[in-house]
Amino acid sequence: MEQQFWTALTASCLAAVFTSIGIFSIRRFRAWAERNMTYFVCFAAGVLIAASFMHIIPKAFKMNADAPYYLLGGFLFLHLFNRFITAYVCEKDPQQQYAIGLVPIVGIGFHSFIDGFVFSITFTVSVFTGVLATTGMILHEFPEGIITFLLLIRAGFSDRRATQIAFFTAALSTPLGMLVSYPFIRETGQQFLGALLALSAGALVYVGATHLLPQAEKEQKRYSLIALGAGMLVAVAIVLSDVH
Image (cartoon, rainbow, N blue to C red; front, top):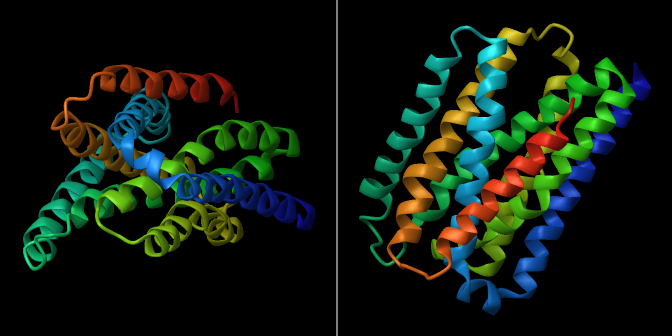
């Protein structure tokens, strides 16, 4: 039991390290990243939308019969959160478009937290199952760090502030989710996990389809459609590798 705990914690921390590498790598090449921001936004939308529809939603539906309601709830929650940020935060400081960064952070942060649950569950089953899960999870951690940092920069946050927020929400949230869930994981049924996955999927679909894509379409970049397709292909690769 103790060995399973430390193995799961190590794997979740490894995922956080890969996310952090993405954050600090893109901060190092900030000028290049800003020139290609629209492409990263389209790429992120492709990953989030495709991964949600191809993997997270089907899995949630299998685990919980009420998953469609939680899916809708996750979508509506972020919509209302976006309305709140736009009405009460951006209105006070119109020079800062905080909603561009804060809304995706909620969706990505919650999903990263649920990733920690996945590490707890898979390593409880067996080390081999956990290793397979870790392989699939790490594939999306590096680009997730890049995307989170760039969205915060676009929202008007400073480099330092964007790095801090991205680290806590996209990277640190995964081992935190593992630590929170592990003591209760044997008592946590599929129904509960399915509900969490559905909420996460609803939030990510909102972020990709109704938040990121409209922002990218305003700039009409020539290769934005290619970037969107590339993001979807990466999501397909993640789904195919996620054999656990």
